[in-house]
Image (cartoon, rainbow over all chains, first blue to last red; front, top):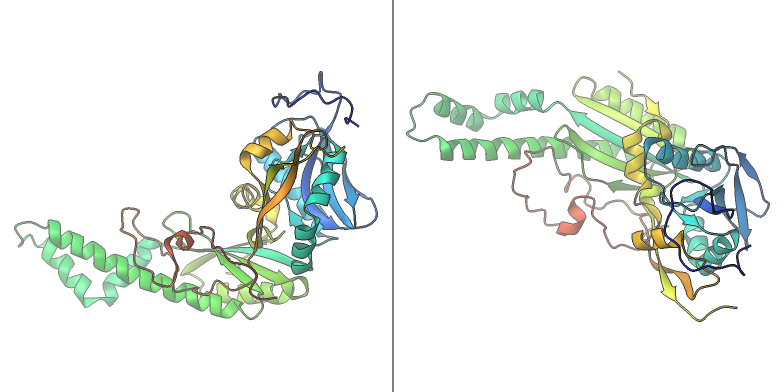
Length: 275
Length: 98
């Protein structure tokens, strides 16, 4: 252990173990567990490091050994982080750690568990046997645009006026048309989104609404589900997707650790020297 | 067409969207310094700055749904939520439903 050889903060180094015989601990998630166990050689960094647990007071950090480095969120690294979480999730309720947290020693990990145990326990209790699913819904803006045009007399007329060149300047008219179309599309999207939520809310404990990405997405949500209700949720999503077939495209992912439903923000604080 | 569920780890975008800043988050600068700091031999400890668990329905679901819209569009008025909550910001909410 490093208690006696502390040499002051050192800068993050490149991923070599050279000159750094001491191994850091990459932390993936926190679970409730009393007995040590291993998840196999799936640690981040592609070195085949064993993933195992470090315990304190009924809590366990799922970790792997690592050189003391800053990890970039590359595809390999991010997926490694997630895959360990998924493995742990098969047996435990997990609180996921955000990407890239490396402690220098096992004792530091224990200190972390000790310092934050109350919060961790509280959250673990709330997240017990709960998992997350992601649901993104896309539409085809061009198709919807045509629908909107077909349905609105006002939009059709304005468009014809602009196209017929009767107006000296079409600038304001085009602005107005844009506004009308946008409003109509927003209304449509709201109706879809509301209907989808209404269907899902009976089998979900909670939902979070994230910002849709790009102009095709109308819904980017996460749902917190009781483990035992996963099949029901699954079934309901299938039903909804079927009922909107041809109009909406559903992208459905999971199970995830409850990333979207837990946010524990930690910082360092100066304190008295401990020993 | 039935929708296929993909397991979490198959979509990089979905993974990054979650792992980078959700769950247990340690301040970015701390995260970098952590790798250089031996907690038990220096005078620091990790403290909880805030906890939020979102166990409640986003109450304004549907009403606040930001639709696909031209990127230049002015933000609509959405009376039920503050601006920071509108686009997946961080609603400051504690547990509301167990």
